[in-house]
Every structure is written in structure tokens, then in C-alpha cells.
Length: 93
Image (cartoon, helix red, strand yellow):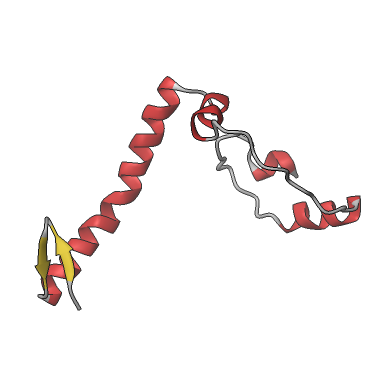
């Protein structure tokens, strides 16, 4: 196994394991900090405009029934986490 670290190819398994452990141990905090900073400067609607600045091509949604929608919402896990829309699954349910 090999991995590129700072433009150098590393073959040592212990070095690779330590680098991966360090990366995955810190990634959640980095993402969380980035998201907090983004929330300070933009609301969810601004984020949508920022990342989706071109119109979508025609989207064709298949027909669905209320029963199917209820089945899907019932299958969602109760969580307090939300996406850019800030709507949790508890609110949806």
C-alpha cells in the first residue's frame, strides 16, 4: 500500500495509518467549524443560490400517492440534525 503525503509517496504502513487516523480524527471538527462559519455569513437560501446558480434541466417526477409518502416519512429515523433547509426529520414526521 502507498499514499501520497505532502507530495511524497509513503510506503510505511505505520506512517500511513497514523496519517489516516489523524485525518479522520480531525475531519468532523473541520467540517463543523466550516459549517459554523458558513452559517455566520449565509442563510440556507443563500447557500442554495451559491451552489445551484444555474437552472436545473427538466426534472420529471414520477407520480406518487399519499400512502407512499407516509411510508417514506415513517421510515425516517428521528433525528435533530438538519441539512441546509434546517428541517429535521422530527419536524417532517
